[in-house]
Length: 143
Image 1 (cartoon, rainbow, N blue to C red):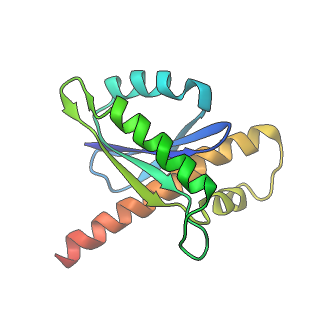
Image 2: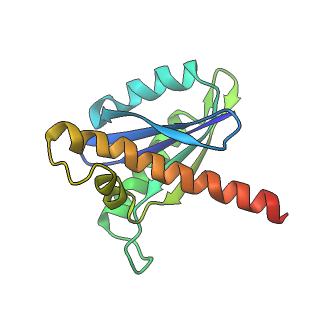
């Protein structure tokens, strides 16, 4: 089953999608925050998603900030609304996203166009999701 990542922002939400074997992922699309619920309703009904990984914006020291608390509240609200789709349970996970946005901008080689900035959210979501997938693979090998 596939996994979806969300990089929740104040205006935009980046999304990324894994392959069915959860080995790799790719940026999917960037959605306006006001359209997120509609996007999730349609997307989760159409795709065999069983896990949604939400970027968890810890501070560099590992603590929480006002933004962290805001993301947790939004994640909890979305989880309550989309815990089950078409009889399929969907697990919601917070995953450390430190430096994902910076890495996304570096991939775009410093492009500062509005389109590049918008796309950087879905690239950041792919970094978040790939980190999660790599962790799953590591623990599968170690176990």
